[in-house]
Amino acid sequence: MKSFLVKVLTCLTLISTLTFSTAFASNNLAAKKAEAQNKATETLQKLYEKKPNAKRVIANSAGYAVFSNTGYRLGLLGSGHGRGVAFNNETGEKIYMRMNEYNVGLGLGVKEYAVIFVFPNQNAWTNFTTKKWEYGGQADASATDGIKGGSVEGAVYAGNGIWVYQMTTKGLTLEMNLKGTNYYRDSDFYPKKAKK
Image (cartoon, rainbow, N blue to C red; front, top):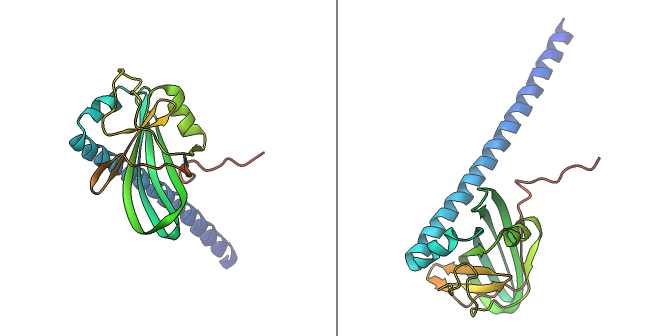
């Protein structure tokens, strides 16, 4: 009888542990999603305060993505990392993403900044969110928005119709170098499926 009771208690303990672990993981992901969305909202509010026209540009686009990043530079090497959310204006879909950057150049320090991408069409949004998007050069600030035929004040052109705003604690900056920066889906939210 004791042996049976021990087996039942062990089984109940395992079930309770698994249930708690699953609930904890689910709550943790929900908290991460809420944090990413809150950061995106705060960043957009700051952008709209500096450049009110950005609200129209983003509202009329196919979608946009907002990233909060931290960059480090120590001697000749630098790197950065961040998280963000891509929003599809037409479908309402949200994709949680990460970014990493690696660069070479003399410097020392830490910089916190935000990057906002604006996508002119569904193809640009889909390419950004489904592939590991990498930008390999200096952004150019001399094109039109492709949405209403006007320029996007305070943003730089990254190619393929994509506009990018970058904000630091001091405000908007037009001196943006996206070289060596990768943007991709966050595996915390989209784990790889096991192969059959």
